[in-house]
Image (cartoon, rainbow, N blue to C red):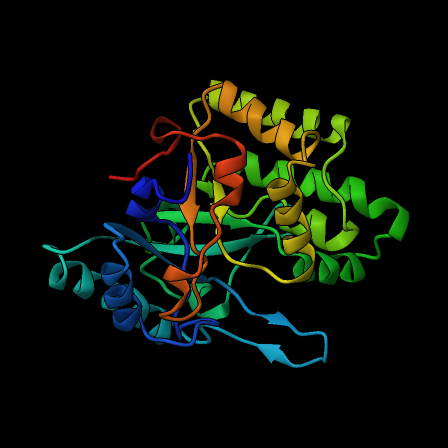
Length: 281
């Protein structure tokens, strides 16, 4: 497979707008996706903010009115662009080390939505970001030597959460925290949990994240591109594929230019075909 195979671009499961940390509005992003050839698009703004390294706060959905506006605007766009693109509402939700969703006050206080209704959206991406994990470790007093095992348990918590449809960039936190990939026993623990979920009828899809990340994510991508990553992360993904797991692709676009600046090297390295892609309908 190569980047010329356009089937990966037919669906994009992750991008962000000005409702969270994106630079452009929902409609501008939709129009850009259409122009880039995307036919199915999931709008996945962050469900909560975070504290930056400089101590400043990025806060999203501070009020119920703001969250209702997000949901209503997506519903409007679904109708407006129905003949051009299939749109889904979504959220990228951080899963804390206690296994709980991190949700902004505006989402929690919206009386018309709840966990039973998936907070009013079609698709939920479960995620662990390195920065949020670090914040949790400090908050709960997790010693440095214990953090790796805690992170693996955190990954298992994402897999086991019945509300999660997609595990977003599953290796971002481990690369960010440890500049490393999964060890064999760690992979086995996560995969065993995954197989149990499948057996129970909970299908979760792994995202191939196409954002050209700097630093730690680029380190991982370079390993794929050079053919060096034949163990650990890649073994994990091959096992997932060989046991019937399907992948979804997310550009992780944060601006209108993001849909055309994506990296397909992981899909190339795993020699994925069209049959390995799940498409939400």
